[in-house]
Image (cartoon, rainbow, N blue to C red; front, side, top):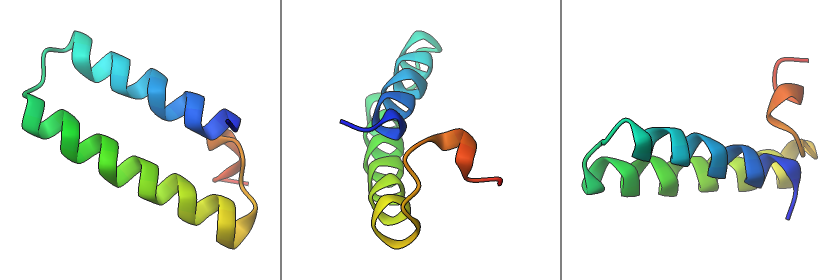
Length: 53
């Protein structure tokens, strides 16, 4: 697992603590994991902090 995958996990934990609906959590998780995969494959980005650089 790359750092960006852990970043998504951390954000999802934060969303769960905020008590968001299961449907919202599933949508966020799916979208963020697809975006992370895109960043890794297209731009070799492996950390969320590297996106703005």
